[in-house]
Structures are given as structure tokens and as C-alpha cells.
Image (cartoon, rainbow, N blue to C red; front, side):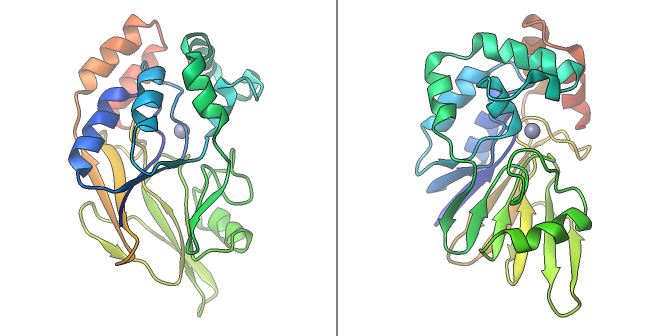
Length: 243
Ligand code: ZN
């Protein structure tokens, strides 16, 4: 089965649409959270996501906060402004969808899905090999797919040397998965690796391969909607620079 793995859509409908078109020919979608927050299109993104085939989705910190389940003070100034806006505009249908999401899912015996990390599904950032090392004992499957950092990456557990290696996989090059690894597809709607293109990955459940992908989208139109909604200008600016 070809699975489209996505994360951190962040209410960016244009980027999300571009990813779905570019990925073409997937049989399931696994989404690693932060569907809303930052961007101008939270309801449209929730709706489009909920229509995807064989969808499995976990919530991110922005989704939890948008539902009012977390103090908005946990977010920095601009993120908080955006969050309060999302709470105002989110429809009852979108809220209902977010409420159904479980924080950790094992869609197969080999895979765990979480937003942040296995030991802290909502908040912990998997940014370095130390964080990864501390998390390998915290899940039971071979592989754990995470989001939250907005940076495509693979942390490999090297059993022989008893260490963790960080790998930034090349776009379009399928990586054979073996041993154990913690893997991030990057962000659809707000990439932070200085590459502004929307990020996603194709996971092949039979071949056990992970193929990172990027696709360009109309950033200008999203920036216009961010400014029209009077959301922080910074969130428009960062899209074209990829941070
Ligand atoms: Zn995020």
C-alpha cells in the first residue's frame, strides 16, 4: 500500500492541495497533526483532510489548543494571536473532527504515529540525536513517524554501536527502512528547513521504503489571505523563506 504521510498542514489549503495533486496514486493518508494554527484556511483544511482515503490522524499541539484543551499562554505572542483567531473561525464540524483524534496510533505492527514524540506526543521536539535516543525505548514498533519540528529527518538507531544517527534524506530518493528509526516527513504548510516548498513523504508498506518529496505551491495567494485575515505578518513572511 502506498501511504501519503503528511504533517503540520497549519491551515495552508493551497500547500495541502498541491501535495495531494503531486502525490497522486496513494491508498491511505497518515497525518501527524497540526492541521490548524498559523494559516488562513483551518476549516477548508480539516474538510479536505477528512475526505482522504483510509485516513489516520493524530492531533498536534495547535489542534489541541484550538479545541480549548490547552492554555493559549503556552504559545508565543504571534502563535497565540493566530490561535485565538483559529478558535473564533473553526466550525462545529471542524471541532468535532479534531475531538475524535487519538494522540498515539499504531496503524500496523511496525509503525507508531505521534505528533511530537512517543514519550510526549504533543510537545516534545525531535530536533537532535539526544531527544531521539531518549525516545527509542518509548515505543514498541520498529518505526515511529513524527511531525512537530517541520524539518524532514530520519533518526536511525544503530544497535551495534549503541548510538543514534541523524540523516537528512534526499528529495525523490526512496530510503529502504530497516532496523529502527524515528522519521519526520517535514511540514506541508510551513516548512522550516529553508526550503519553502511543501514537504511530504510516500511510505510503501510492502517494500518498506520512505520517499521524501517537495512540491511548489502558490505562496503569494496564501500570504494574501493571511494578511486579509489580519493574522500576524510574520506568518506570511516566513512561508516564502521556509523557516
Ligand atoms: Zn506545527
